[in-house]
Image (cartoon, rainbow, N blue to C red; front, top):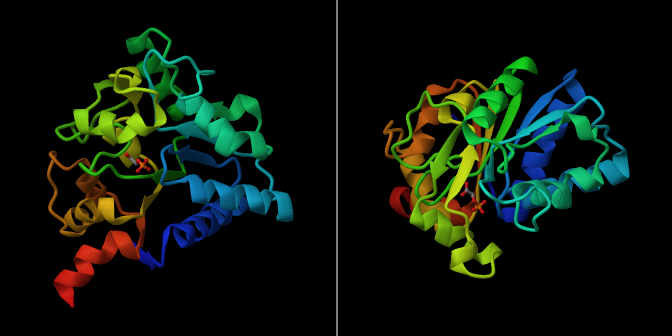
Length: 245
Ligand code: PGA
């Protein structure tokens, strides 16, 4: 696991975009795994800006998103589908038919099997972008999820619902379930880029850097992967600094 330290959230976005753009420019028919949430927004802003200034093309890019809420229509303002179009897909030239997110309105078990199958049919994910939850979740794989799990339905942890409540009108509106790629699906990606910024994530980062592998801390599964880069800002790294200096 390689650690890149950056100053702040904006710098994290610049560094992450730099790595993603390098792979996009240099890989034929690249398959990206993408994430939603507050974490990747500055990364997407940099990607969009680059597209506008340098014209980097996404005609050859396929993307699979990590997760989607169940029972939320794709065109709902809070769906991850809407998030991705708003922050990225509307602003770059990725072909519509190469964009994949789990469908939270489909028959669930069938959708899980189909999603996993679609990823395989595209040759697997070349570069997976990940955030991390305060409880160590990756995608919506909450503590206790098997490391060999494939795309599946999850009941969201109460802490996760609370963390996401800021995007909804009230707590009752926050979905209780989601479809997520599994930890096994994530580990099959050829390369993984984990983004961590902000003080709220400092405990999770400290735990990850502790290198103990534990199913109760999903992100620790990444220690089983040979090509993981973590980009972390100072605020997230503060626990390390106060412990080691
Ligand atoms: P965040 O979520 O980027 O909104 O902090 C990350 C996650 O929970 O995986």
